[in-house]
Length: 456
Image 1: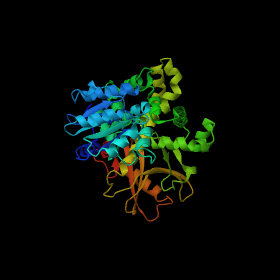
Image 2: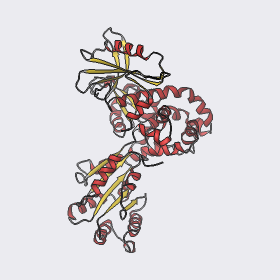
Image 3: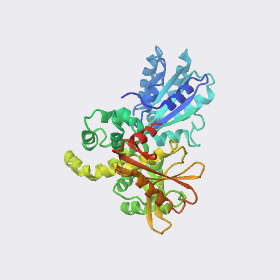
Image 4: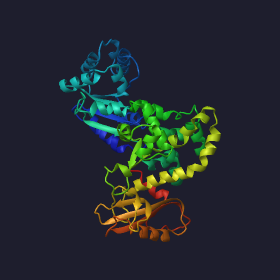
């Protein structure tokens, strides 16, 4: 699969390594999101790229010296007793400025805990350093701790800190060469992780991909969450348990605590950690103060993780017996409902990307509560305009709509009953799966519109 997007990240990285002053660049993010690919597509001839392994520090130095020796003749002919001697000799032998990238840097730190302090010393006390240094890692928690915590030796010394997130949803149409309609279904399973897209592209169909890549106990993503949690979590078992109960339908803090048989107060930190790592999100009704925890609902934020904990975890015992086809048949009737929920998420994300009817809107949310008639009501999408004069109110249908004009009028009537509508002008919108009409009414959006918006 070709290198997609990441132009902004690449531009910042190129700018950093083009400076005369030696730079420290930190790149981190979830595994398989394309950090290494970004670096390899940015480094120039003569630069050094090294991938650390989980090995003894002596072996790590030997491997790094050998990699440097491929660019600097004779560098690996010396035995380096410590890291300081290696970095000192590197600076002495460099003739032209270059970039040294150490990928999977946390592996080096595990075997050499004092390495960040040494690098601090080199950065602070080597005014004539001739190389830029890129430190890259998939352990988000460890990388953040090394550069963002005030107690860290490298705190405040990075010239660039680039967090690599999953790709924007719209790029999946290009990666899989599929229609925007099919892209919604694909994204609902694979999310925005480029490596997952590569694996999917090798399979002949959606069904075959789900079975062979995820459900099969030998599939490359069958144990993916466990691997990710080992990178990012101190308590990987607890993270797995929390996501399992949320995937099974528990959303409120009290429900999660009850199913785990734990006091709710014990879950605050692990829930916040999962949110910071991008695995969970906390939903509030539109306009609700963030501190009002009583109305908040926890959802799995990442589509792949959501699919995994919704469908795979409850069937782990059957999958261990190799009943892959049976499990797929059992989840197949539920897939459209699952995709419809992700369609809602995509539609909400699309609202603030570009103006709607020439009006710029803030981030969209869902709303549920009691309307002015004291009736329970739920709205899929609510967003306020940047100038606070308009209120966008919309519904998402993972189906066709025969009379979109009538539905738009109904939405407008419902919107006027919202307790926070006030004197704001209502902009009704609908997002639908497909339509038989040649001319699409204004403020009616199809998957093609949404995926185009979500390519930025």
